[in-house]
Length: 89
Image (cartoon, rainbow, N blue to C red; front, side, top):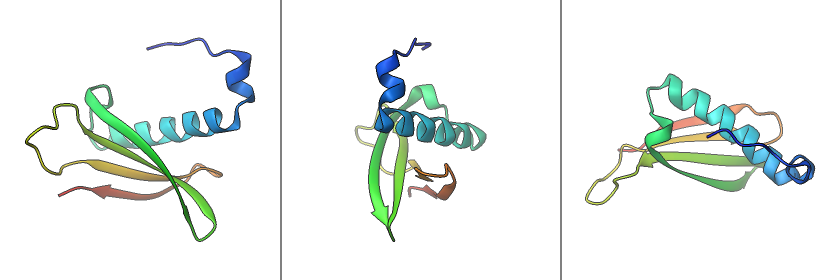
């Protein structure tokens, strides 16, 4: 999945922030045994106590008739620190 990024991408603060957050979350997900390439991944941005966080959710691609088991990793968008790791039931 290698991709050449254009100069426009490097100038886009949101694109760079989400790419950084995704790389951090993917590393932790791999450490926890998640097959990232076979996961349905979503990202949600939210604000907690004035801090911008991104929640990266890893779930099964074949999610029909399945419940729970997702991995959720919250990452601080500014410093790249993982704030919380949650497993779904």
